[in-house]
Length: 141
Image (cartoon, rainbow, N blue to C red; front, side, top):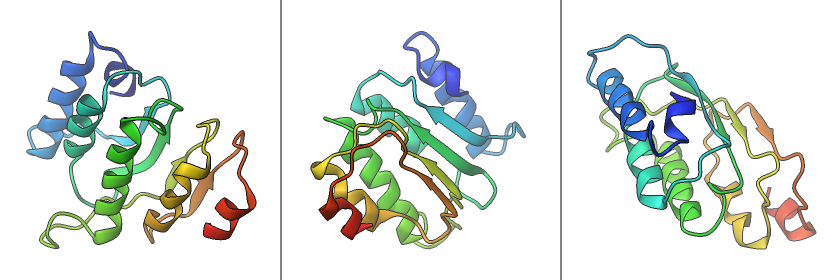
């Protein structure tokens, strides 16, 4: 699904697979989603992240790339993390239990320091390697 989602020719297939998983029509394991090669627009990212089925054990690892962590895509990522921290959709369903968030080489800067306030409590591993974080970002973390 990760490879399909990062390419404009395969995006529709990735979205459809996520929708099938979300509606229980497919038992494909998701486990991780690698968006390090994602280069599509913020609208596509929002659609993709909104299609991730809720529930523990569904998505445990999310890998982001530099495109996901800047410009118009960054607010979409922040909204997704905000939803995870809030506990899912209206508290009716269990939230995704994200255990690993890989933000390596995402060009995180001063503008992205708010991301640390949105990290879900289920998070066990956070990869920030390859980023030049300033003191204020480290204080926020």
